Image 1 (cartoon, helix red, strand yellow):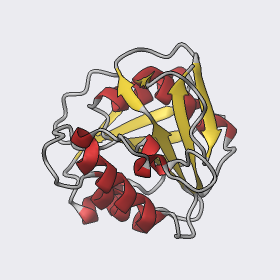
Image 2: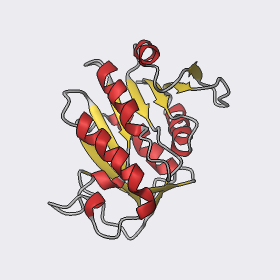
Image 3: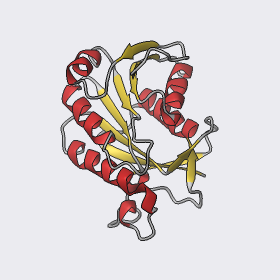
Length: 206
């Protein structure tokens, strides 16, 4: 059965692929963006990410809300994932599902060590790690249907299904990247299967 899906961050590398995979899956897709200039055949809703009243009104009626927002400027410490996650977490109802894209640092490397705490983590990603962690620690304890998608470094590319996923832990792989299409493919499959709730999933190419 098709789902009504609303995508935030739909103009970004990952957001475009999330829209693409959900359209392929037959879902009815809407996007929340600043300007009405989206090329895909979707319903466009314009608004700002800090407009709480607008977002509260917009999210009603959707089965799944996906946030793929993020700060594209690695040098800018301004948090983007966290503020949007907090707003959406307050707005979703018990019948709705919230899927948030963060980073692999939220997953465990072993039974006691988060990937974000491993030595040798890229310095240029420190602001993103802080943003993702703040979002996770605020949202994870809430009693809502929420899933964190935690890919490693995301690069351009369509879905080919050649990736690994694991709940809570980061999958064992020599790969350091994953295509945006494969992240979106997992999200599309998960929207249909509805296997996971109140947890996080690590993703990496095989």
